Length: 91
Image 1 (cartoon, rainbow, N blue to C red):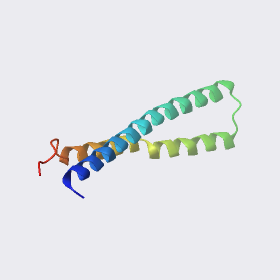
Image 2 (image 1 turned 90 degrees about the horizontal axis):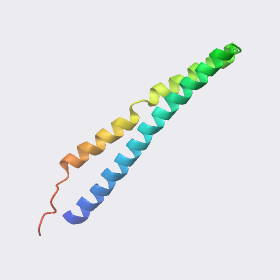
Image 3 (image 1 turned 60 degrees about the vertical axis):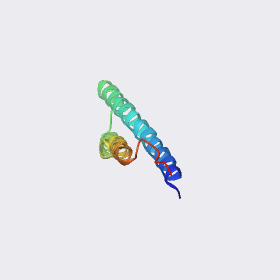
């Protein structure tokens, strides 16, 4: 693969990773907000069961394990972009 093709492929990969990272970060925020709203509504109703509480805690654990993954992908994309030459080498 010549350098121009390599640069174009790398640019596309960086753009794709950045988009995925942005989407994950936005999704994390929406999940966290939704979980907080569900928890508040359930607590206000005062009728949760121990099983509901356990399920919610498990879900919160999953969300916590995903938190930051979007940023990690975006950071990786930025690192790749930093090593990618901004000017296509001339043959």
